[in-house]
Amino acid sequence: MIDNWFAEHGIVTYYEKAIYLDSIRIVPDWYIPSIKIYVEFLGLKGDSSYEKIWKLKETSYKRHDVKYVTLDEQDPGRP
Image (cartoon, rainbow, N blue to C red; front, top):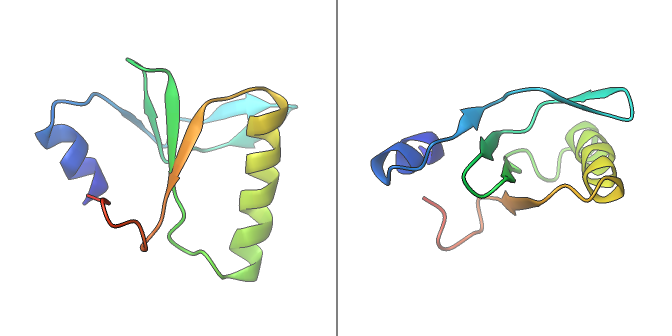
């Protein structure tokens, strides 16, 4: 659904293209190259194992000054 919204609005993205930060393989949900930002959909928010993985990912993003935004089911403007 989110991927379709990007396509319908002419937004070019890379879907689940792996990056490496601190020798850790991270798979962001989307990358928008035109604005150099990663988009993460927190679809399993509340699941403890998912939360642990997300915290590691978020920590790596912050440590390396990676620009990112998050979306979840509660976002009113979510595509």
